[in-house]
Image (cartoon, rainbow over all chains, first blue to last red):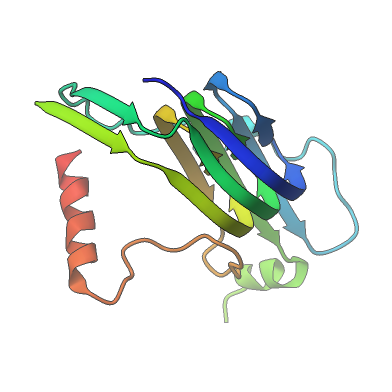
Length: 130
Length: 74
């Protein structure tokens, strides 16, 4: 398929974080991925290396693939060679996401996020039996 | 089967987006193939603020039924 050009007058992106990208121009293939251990903890102590990806199956389990379908012959007629956009305003892009102004062949993105809430007092109380 | 697309023209004014997160994409341009995967795990009692919409909890029963069907197929 022939790719169209893009004309964009103005773009503002405030934040690009955690394995994300902001691309101007064409690209053939992008495979961003992010693994996140998000620890929210009561108390001021944070031990380094306390949390490991290997301890949680969310970081190793396979993603389900869509069943393959029959291929369809497609023909695209671009009667206008450009896509025209006036202005874009984006606050943030995060966790293996992507902004692209231009054409993209293949995009395969993965993100795995595990959250923790560690509350000191409640955890101790949970073990006592009334 | 012949799949024929006529792109007569595309003109857009202003776009405003708060956030693009967890394997999402905002693309101005042409594309051949996109595959986006995301796993998200959080404690049940935690407060969720953000664009993570729980699936299958819509008002009509149709959505819930189609979710069950998908599980059986796999």
